[in-house]
Length: 446
Ligand code: NDP
Image 1 (cartoon, rainbow, N blue to C red):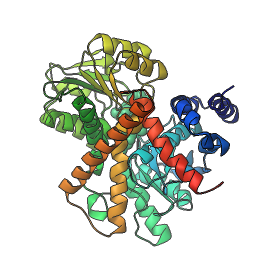
Image 2 (cartoon, rainbow, N blue to C red):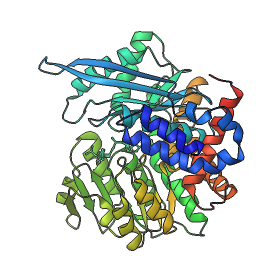
Image 3 (cartoon, rainbow, N blue to C red):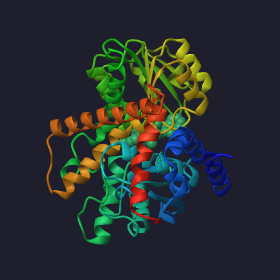
């Protein structure tokens, strides 16, 4: 039995009932088979066993009071997965589906993604099964304060620097930062995604969506194409989806969908800047349902319970959540002419879907490469905080574009080097892995 297979079986045995973690590990390990053949030192030093075992997992109780004075208990987590190339870095997710397996998959992915950004950041992830939907702002604040009271013991600007993810946006980062500052009596860059007037970076809110489109632009350029006139489907209507749409509009594409956990909007006329401003207000200010879009724009249709993959498109940007494109969705996308998929979300395509895209020569940018722009600009926010300075918008955007081109080049080069040209899944996993594995070798058995 091969080393890779042994390690995978060990991971499944040691981490029962965590299918998302198994899925993320499987994808990485499958890509690494040829690397293990070329570099026996990784097996000799048990790099894969070490890499699949988080350095530290913190799990804690988060008690809080609602507006009526009733007591609620949620569970909080921080997975500090790998610090070989820098302090742990990765977002916090507040969503009722959060449990250990989801956060371990996300933290594991983050290790390779952060490595690809070219910046010195290790991998981590955290969050809670708390559902911010339907809670008042005061309830969200009390929850964030309780969550940070425990989390503050484990993080710091040179140790572990969380950011946002699903359910954690600017409002939550503000509440979390306020409590950290109060407990520690220090104003440091311990969180990224901060507001501009207290340490945030320009372009951070935009970074993941813009970055996914820049990555896609790099993929299109390999075929001598650009976004002009391309019909694009986007899922989700949160942070990543909103700024993906903004950049697509700017580059002359025609985004025609958005969605939320209840259903999808198809707007055949295209979403323009005015409609996007409405989506932003609907989701960020009123925290409402995307269904209302169809009440306002009469040519648009709402599809309850459906994801947007039935809509014909040239390019697809899954930007909501994990496993939102299965094999059937992928086959339908291909059949209707989709030739590019860039994953704004983490692991939105399941293994059957990935196989279908690769078998049909779709330009497929996996999340750990295509959505690395968010954490990359978080890294730039840390750099600005450490220097007590702030870079102008153009400077951050220029660096983001350079980083996304570098991520693309590393993935493309590694894929070609290992005999799979054009396969960004294999390329991103190998390029992300090698940098971390070599750092682990340098640092001894720790
Ligand atoms: P937001 O909370 O801003 O938005 C999430 C969107 O996805 C909402 O429209 C939400 O709908 C929808 N959604 C969430 N869960 C589900 C579900 N189970 N089924 C269907 N739809 C769902 O999060 P982000 O935009 O920040 O994150 C989206 C994805 O991008 C995630 O996979 C995240 O890990 C990834 N990502 C985010 C980064 C960032 O910088 N924010 C960086 C890199 C990756 P509803 O309103 O109904 O909940």
